[in-house]
Length: 617
Image (tube, rainbow, N blue to C red; front, side, top):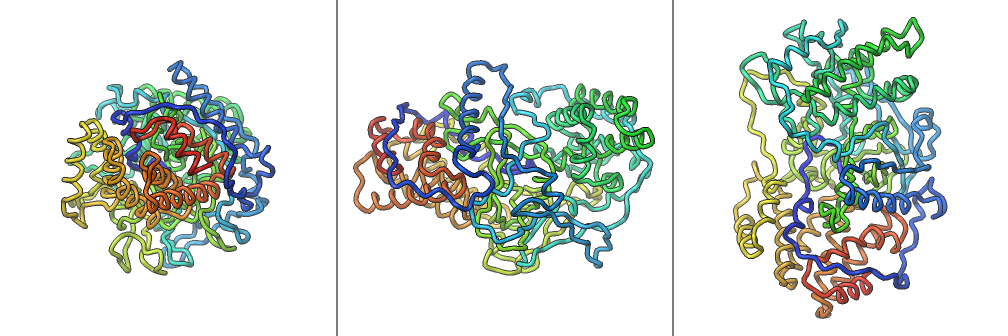
């Protein structure tokens, strides 16, 4: 679950339309083999203070209300255990601290990049940050984002000239390449932008309310021969909504800007002007943003001597702050039932949130030691392995399934560039001290090139392909999947995760056809891929192990070897789940209740219940 930069929807978001389901009621059996509650999770205290179960109940309640009433969007998730950004900025957090590293002389940069670092040794499974967003936009509020309301090029270019602008210009400092002490690639959003070089000074002075938006897959590098604003260079309606809501919050509480939002990247006007400007592709939202920005100075939100300059700064920086700091929100999205809201999936609770420094100062790494998950709009950041004192804390900005890909493929997905020094066959070799060096220059910060760009390749088994396959009859689908698996892989174009997705599709199809005995190897290949390439604590790995365990029982009459496999997968799933989410078996059953209520195999409900009881207590 990643920032919105060019992530591909996972296979489970499309599959349920073709999978028969047998509903049953999960009873409350005695808890067997209860894993010990993870002692590493700090700052939550007793189970009565743990917010996760309450949040899960709220999520289930809101999803049901939404199913009954499509106009319902009042998702008000309450959490009293959130991390204070002020505590982090002032060094009062028990486990983590913000550091600002100075730029190296080789790069000519005086600015430093900010990151989060461990103040002490931290065990795997420790909750580092629990955060609520400053503003949020739910996907169900933006269902018409693909309608015909977009403005054309002429209208867009004309309206851009009316935006508030600034005469300030940025420095010529290059961005800073950064590799942590272990040689792992680390991306800092504050070091990501290179100088937006200026062959047209007048255009540089137009307000940042015209920025490029790549968060939702816009083609940010599409070149055109003319000088008009390109279709791919417009921001999304969703980010426009977040900008408007941020402006409203600032009007209500001006200190929100001075104490929180102003601390986010880009950290000053000069930095903002080195970035591509932002302009909303939705005409009505864009005009409303312009109207509200024009009113700011007249509201006297700040001391009189600072008010005008402060308001100009907000107009220049806020759209870019939203663009570079928003994160996607999905609740229990690793579950295979997730996209099917009629069966209890929580896809209706997906959205986008803008978070403060407690989240935004966590940088990217392709070998992350932190994982994140959401319940509603409450976001949790948890160590996925033991961390030593002084180590930087990073999570992945892209889906974990893409971390094994090479640098150029990750660059395409993340919209950032990487430089290879010692190449490996795949992506980063976690056993190597040096395999890659990040080049902190975002694609969005490049001037259009007159040379034809190298062709960019994306995963073949994307959401559209998955949807098409799952819409096919099971027998025909199986033939198509086998044909795709038999094709020889092209190491330049093909993604390793394509095969991984195909094995999951094949396992689902075989289970649907009642062939669990041959589906099990497919599930296990998917599990092996996840265990090899994903961080140690990963929620998708848990979901895959659960399906492998249930498949291995083959309707309750497994051979001894398969029964042993089932127990092994179930035990690992419970162990990792408890480390990541806490709460032991009880919480596991709570999170997986709907998954077990929507079985993927043609077996009676009573048999399914018996299997769940045997495997998970």
